Image 1 (spheres, one colour):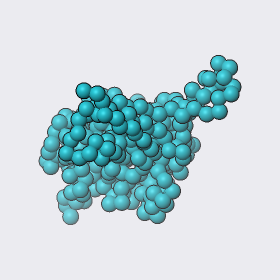
Image 2 (tube, helix red, strand yellow; image 1 turned 45 degrees about the horizontal axis):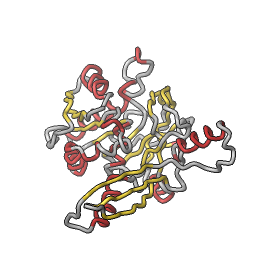
Image 3 (cartoon, helix red, strand yellow; image 1 turned 90 degrees about the horizontal axis):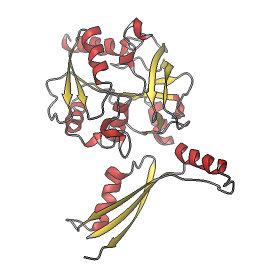
Image 4 (tube, chains in turn red, green; image 1 turned 180 degrees about the vertical axis):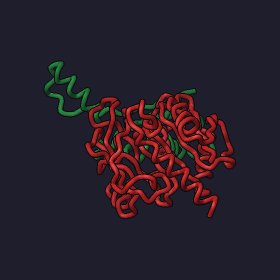
Amino acid sequence: MKFAVPVFPGSNCDHDMVNALRDILQADADLVPATTTDLTSYDAVILPGGFSYGDYLRSGAIARFAPVMTAVKAFAASGKPVMGICNGFQILTEAGLLPGALQANRSAQFICETSELIVRNVETQFTSDYATEAHLQLPIAHGEGNYYCDEATLAELQANNQIVFEYVTNPNGSVANIAGIINRQGNVLGMMPHPERAVEAILGSTDGLGIFKSLLAHREEVTHA
Amino acid sequence: MYLAKVYVTYKESILDPKGEAVHDALHRLGYTNVDSVELGKYFEIKLTAGKKTVEAEVDEMCDRLLANVNMESYRYEITEMEA
């Protein structure tokens, strides 16, 4: 399974992601520049965390128009998995690949801590490795992670089981304790917590591994079906 | 040449923690008569008429980039500049 990790000017979790994929999960992973226009040779795309384009205007607002995003949209439309972590999640909402928006934390402060999450939907290709309602310890590090959507969108997310991760204790003011959501088709996931920072015991948690293991297992199923 | 002044602010339902922080700071400075502070963005865009009307184009810029209409609203004033 070959992963593409697009690198925008200002991305800063790209190497952590590639380290997790290559060194811990023994998967193929390439850092690809934001100018890339073709991702068809990859099996999954992960938009990493950071401060793409300095978070100018709004987080993710400029990255959304980078050439690679046209390729990411085509990739998502083809049904292949796309995941956005932190700034990657912000980019996915700005690009319209996921509903809602990430606004400033309620406290107006940057929050960097370990958060406890509940996996609300284990029937996705990103979460099948987890037990139902599993509790995870994953790091968060964001100033604008406060998920917002209007009531109609929230009702739709709930009705279609699109809320994948919830905070046990809401750190940032997110609507309905939302930490991560998936699109209706089930192949685009966005989450504020950082699974790639929780893949080795020495990092304090290995609870992030399940997401990557789920993707790898799903890929196995697809290729051997 | 035209000058478009664009104002982007949060919708009412959206928290404005930065505005609240400024509000609190003004109170600490003694301006206890300050009732609320809304902190938004202001753009000055100089442009020539393109294929569409200047107004249609500025409106489109707001929708596509300058504001995130999920949580922000915008308004603008367009004036023709002296040559």
